[in-house]
Length: 275
Image 1 (tube, rainbow, N blue to C red):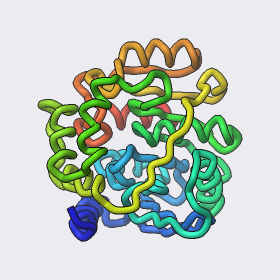
Image 2: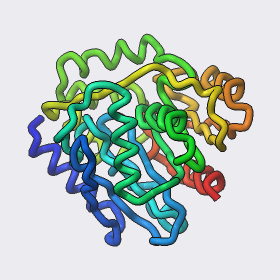
Image 3: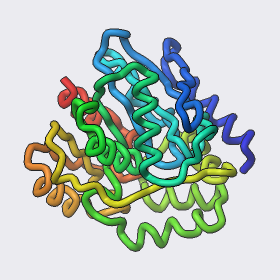
Image 4: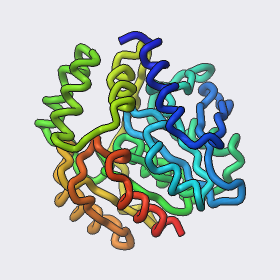
């Protein structure tokens, strides 16, 4: 799938966002970062970090609700497909991602903000909250991967064909296997599938964050039917490691159906937690 196909799906999904959404390309030492900004200027700032191949646009079903009360900053991740560009300091390790987020928050003039991530974005959010707890008010983790438990082996096995030989067909087959009968928005499926084939992607990961060190308010939302990990085991580990955390399992959800499918409960729990 060509880069132009990704751009087409990206632009189509961008059109699903409220007309008042602003686009910013925030300069950082690692390159300009695309941020989709929506909500009242005096609203509490919330930074949204998506999962891999999802782009910041994946939150389109959440933005209308969140943007009524919050100033939302949805980010295209450094190193992933999207309109954040790698320029300047090379992206090599997890420490670079943390430095990039430091610079991004500085540029957005956010001394402190709520931080919310899904999947890989949740791993990054938890890692950043341990790195710079003074900058994070509240932390929301949506079906986080590599945070409380490891990936299920059969999840990695099914992901392998799309990783070794990326194609739209393999990416769609993987989504269909993981989400089962949960319907997914077609434009986002095209975005995800084409994102996996964009040249030059460099997804950086690191060690599992030491969540016992988190002292701030934390919300953990897990997908009941996630094939990425075992929801009940992840929930138990979250409760042990972070006694102050709110932990909920979202009925009927799968890993890749979040955050866009049936978002009402997710939006409600997020808003209750953030206020």
